[in-house]
Length: 119
Length: 115
Image (cartoon, rainbow over all chains, first blue to last red; front, side, top):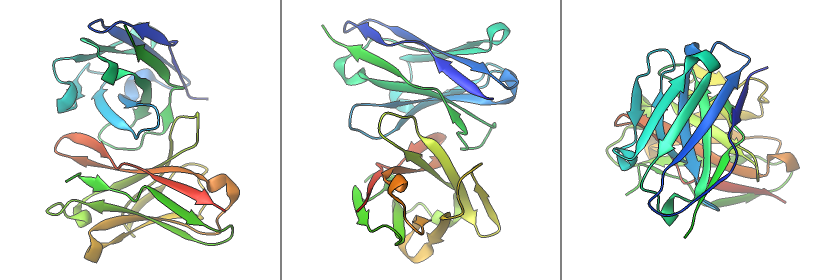
C-alpha cells in the first residue's frame, strides 16, 4: 500500500533552518507530485508548495518564496522540504502529500512532522 | 477578503444532512473551478473526500461513502459539500481547496459537530 513516512519532530531556534523528509513507498515515486502543507496548532491548512519528483520542477507559495526549498532523491524515493530563517510563526505540523500532476487530488498524506521554533 | 470563506462551525443531528459551504471571493467565478474537499479528524492528517466541478465532471475519493457529495450554488458563488445521513464519525474539520493564481488555496475550515 502507498505510504508517505515523514521524519521525526524537530526543535529549532529562531533563525535556524529545518529540513523535513518524506519517504514514499508502494508506488512509483516519479509518477506523482509531492506537495507540502502546514498546520499551526488549532489553525487551518496552509499550502507551501509542490515538487515534481520526475523533473525536479517546483512551485512555491508566494509567502514562502526565498525561504523554502523542495528537493528529492529519486534513488531512495524521498522528498525534502527545507525552510530557513525560522521564527516562532513557523511552529506547526508539516505534511507531505502526493497527487497526480496538475490536480488537487492529494490522495495520500504523510503522518506529519511537528516543527517547534523556540529560543 | 479571503479567497475562500467557510463558516467556522456547524452542528447537525445524527441522521440529518449537513451542507457545508465554501464561498469564493467576489470576482472569482465558482463555475470555472474544481472544488476539492478534505476531512480532518483530530490528530490525523487530512483525507481526500472528493472533487467537484459539475455534475458531469466530478470524482469521489476511493472508499468515500456516497453520503458525501459535492455541488455548487452559482447564485452564492459557492461550492457545497453535502453530507447526508450524518453519523457520529463524520464529526471532523472540513476544508475546501481550489487552484487560484498558481497556488493551492485552502478555506479556513468548518468544524462539524454531530450531536
